[in-house]
Figure 1 (cartoon, rainbow, N blue to C red):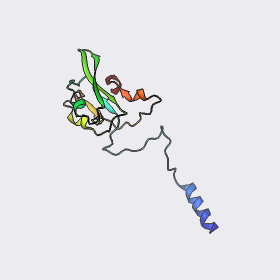
Figure 2: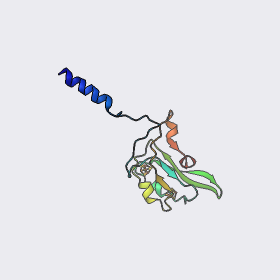
Figure 3: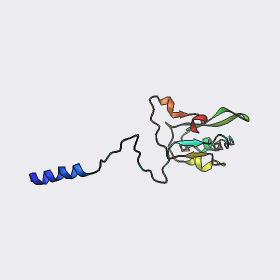
Figure 4: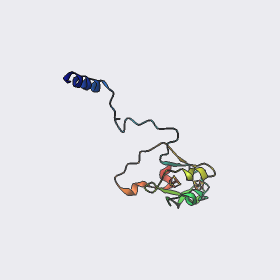
Length: 120
Ligand code: SF4
Ligand code: SF4
């Protein structure tokens, strides 16, 4: 009985650690993983299709200054996001995509509200 227990402890010591040294080590993600949005401001046509399709009113169209003047672009509130990717699906120029980035830890809830400039 004691021998078996010692064997078990020995096995445990030889095994690789079950946890990762976050943030230096990151989990391998599946191909269809959906993380934080990325927006290409230069190709967004301000059509608001992403805001209209969003099932959780996560996207607001806000003014931003561009080389071509003031334009409306999506602001994303990650606190409300379901990561369903409908906004990505409907975007005509495919300038709004969901990346594999899942690092959006924050000290303040307001940091979850991402203006178009923050989604680059
Ligand atoms: S992923 Fe879904 S819930 Fe999140 S902003 Fe896009 S449409 Fe809305
Ligand atoms: S991100 Fe895409 S869907 Fe949203 S306003 Fe820009 S072009 Fe339209």
